[in-house]
Figure 1: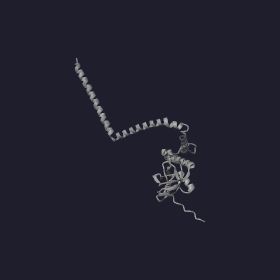
Figure 2: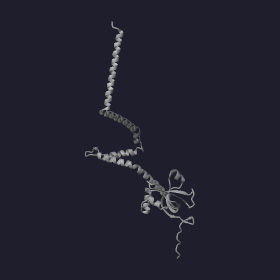
Figure 3: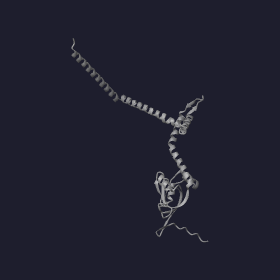
Figure 4: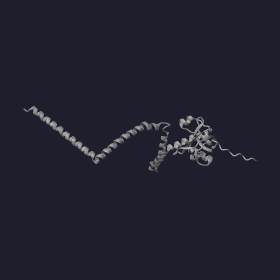
Length: 267
């Protein structure tokens, strides 16, 4: 009869050898994998896998955005009207009928349509801003333009990039916080249109500002806008000067006086 202990020992040896062999196979497989990953082909394969994974994730995110945001917006009534209109315009522009009456996709028309879309997209912001400013300035000019006498000091360029100037003054030589005022002088489409119609030239804010000398001046100011401090301080909406004619005040005996006009000749 065989010895049970010897049989158990042989089985344990076989099991240990099998585990060792499996460990060697795993180590060799890991070494081969590391060598493959370190090779050029392995690096390319890894990058392709990452790109494929990223593409799948982006595609899934895009489908979610389309199904939950884009499609409901485009399908809605008023909000989706511009998108549906553009879709009709796109189909009209890029598809042409051939001799047999079949609608054929035109690469040339699609490219031109794409360029036009990009150009419009880049300019839609400035166009909307300028249109809103034109409407705002025109409405204010039509309802609040007036000519008054103000005592103004020197003008100052406060936004050089936009060519915007500021000047300040009061209703009288004796100035207080109750009758003081800040004016703005800025270029705008509405100002240019008015200047072309009335004066035959464009509106140049720097030339208007130059008409206010570095002195205390009695000025006939044509302007529009509100003087309410709520608008001026709360919303940064200042009255805008359109025209100005100034006469510097002369110093006579220490007191500021307006220059005297010559008396009319006696007949």
